[in-house]
Length: 261
Length: 261
DNA sequence: AAAATAGTGTCTATGAGACACTATAGT
DNA sequence: ACTATAGTGTCTCATAGACACTATTTT
Image (cartoon, rainbow over all chains, first blue to last red; front, side, top):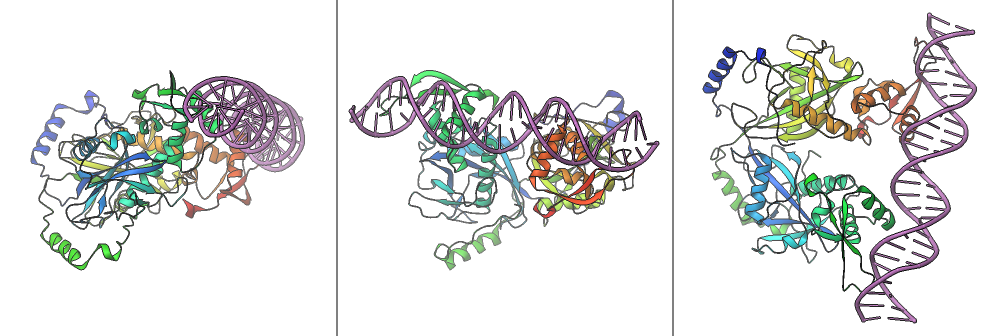
């Protein structure tokens, strides 16, 4: 998907003088001739925390929006791809690698950044909560609870709150960016194997259901969820069971085909 | 969706000296300090032509990819939004206004344009064939038939052919860009009212079905399609009928709520 | 009358939700 | 024994596809 395949032109369509002509053109091309916007990537890192959705925020140390909270992001370097830039941001700012990344949307209103024209390509990433709580620098990092004021896939800005229920002021248009991540997540959940990204390798069906419920913000039918998941063929029983649970232990499952994501 | 709403910070969070501090910072900010990529918009204009999908292409008059076919596009200007840039491209290069536009995906591989780093935000637009055939400059414009070598929503590059079945060589990664448009179109067709965009204001149910079949590249069940469309509440009977059709004339319908798109 | 599509009614297969029931751990 | 959840079986309801049939226009 992120590897554009430009088909080689058939030989009669690209005679040698045409290629040479293009080479000369490119040698004269002045890349600085026009004003151009800055391009950033922003990564909405979503996790499930105490039954609800949460996202990783950084407190901005610098202007603009100094002191407000922002999704991790950074400028796209000239030699890296967009998804590569998103992966770098995730690695450098959050210490996370190997996460599933999906491009969400590109935000480019002229005034969304007061410095200059900034166009931001937003990505969503999913991670299970256990990998997230381990990271340090907790003063400037915050795993904030997401409150979604709309139902289904309506879309729109969301609010984020800290563990005390205090609303965190967001920088830029990040309330909309995070909202877009939620909308897309809800839309893909039914037909794409993404719930697993929010859990550790092994999980019970009820844990998976709770994750789906957290994403969709509504209760699901147990029987139907069970049947759908097992019938999908994406799950594989491990033979292991829960223990110390105070009731009949559930079997643990794993996702059959992580490569097919 | 394209209007990021940055919530106003509560008063105690933005004291006057902080605002003043930020003002001074912005005054010193040098927007030229870093190398930055160029940003373009590309618009995949899709229509239905003789039972299949087609898209508007321009023959490139200049390098790079001189002589090859490209989707209409252009550089994003500093003061315009992304969707605004796409609408401008559509107006200036194709003479079309008021079309439904949806952001598709942003392509940003470092080498996709040989001139310099170009990041391209791709949009899809839909138009009924009657509005498209009217435009002039037919030597450099081509409404090319799209051939989709994959089924369903697999995704991937497509091929485009002229009316003689001759393959048209595409510039840049536009085979992938057009493929992305088809994939999204197929995905949205079931639950979004987009089939109407490809038809004139009034249409029969069979015409609408043929459009859906062209997009999905598979036959649909007549009875089921009828029921679904009428039950959706999106259609409104006009009371008018076809004429000169050699069989029982069908009632014409119109889309009830164009504003809700 | 023939041809061709419009439009309606009904049967069936499928999948989700609802519900009842049994199973099995910890306390 | 009690509690809580795991897991199974069955019924119902909604929807899509299949099919049969009638309706209405032009040729």
